[in-house]
Image (cartoon, rainbow, N blue to C red; front, side, top):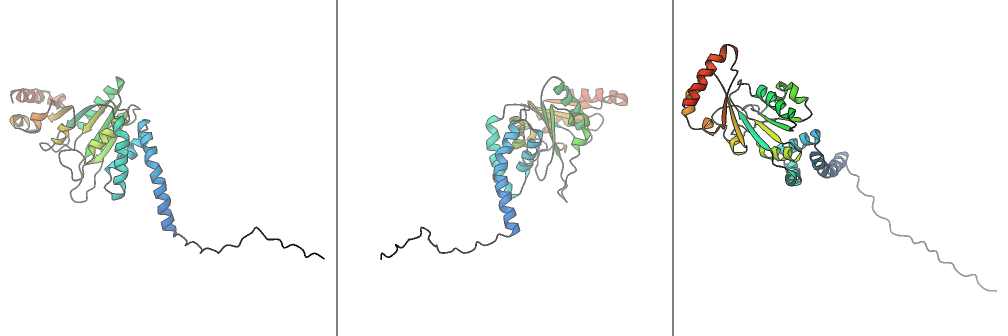
Amino acid sequence: MKKPKKHTSALKELQGVEKPQNLSSVTALKLKKARKQKQHIPQLIQGVLSKNKTALSRAITIIESTAPKDQADAKELIQGCIAHANKSIRIGITGVPGVGKSTFIEQFGTLLTQKGHKVAVLAVDPSSSLSNGSILGDKTRMEELVKNKLAFIRPSASGDSLGGVARKTREAIILCEAAGYTHIIIETVGVGQSETVVHSMTDFFLLLKLAGAGDELQGIKRGIMEMADAIIINKADGENVKAAKLAKTEFNRA
């Protein structure tokens, strides 16, 4: 009698592995956020190039951030947009607080949009030297321009930057140009003679003055008035007409 053949099984028993260590909920959340953020920047760049205002606002928020974790993202944003940044007409507008910069910009910006131009307004608000906070109220004073589909308004805090502009105004200009804005208006802090940095980053530098504010004789001084391409005496109506004409004469003599 033949002995039955032994059948060998194809199954092999392997040595077990240790149970993987459970990630804490905090660590898992950080990894998830990092993966999401890595995919987020290319999408944000595409949003800016697609002329999406929300994407443009988020991109400017990232480049203005002082957090170390945002520095690499800010660099990637600029590198992704700079090649698509078309040359715009850059207009700097300055003047002391209360001269009417925001009101003037709303009317001027509306006029440009009526001619079919896309207008971006970068409004720089002063920051408190104590709290470093800023009201960012310029946008609220441009109620009509805010609703204009051809306009984009972005208020930013000046922080510790000098020269009337924010720390990342140049980078914000690049993003606005990449988003297709043809005219970029930079409204400065409004501190007077120190606002000269904006002159170097604009094509046209406009100075707004008030009649009867004691500024007429300052036209002979070197500084911001010498750099201005044009000076407008604002609020020259009603009882201020005579004072405005006198101020114009004084500026012409200076």
